[in-house]
Length: 124
Image (cartoon, rainbow, N blue to C red; front, side, top):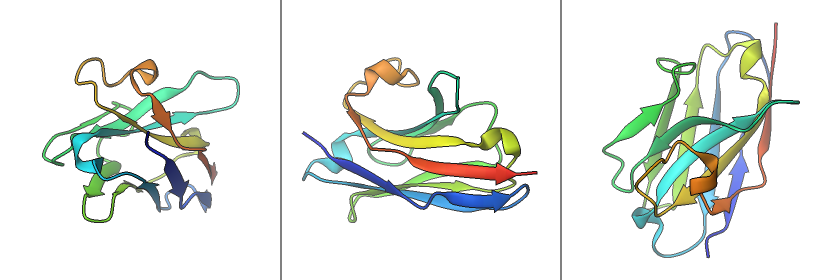
């Protein structure tokens, strides 16, 4: 079992920045691939970014490449999502998730553990 708690969401004007954090329970945090997903009203949950257990490999959705950066601190059992140059279309509830799977890790149903989500609102 792993419990995930996100924080850091809020309201920001277009062009602004936010950093999301996700604190995880458990002593095997470094074994898990960590992902960030988001879900806007009326839309399906979509992949944003993921990072391997070591932190050496990352992957991003095309829509956030160059603006978002995922990182992790295994000593603190925490994963981060730094977001810059935010756009109104980034408005969504952002979720962190974890998985031991190494295949199809951009698909939500490959992640068994999820946080409760944190709202990010970007105004134009």
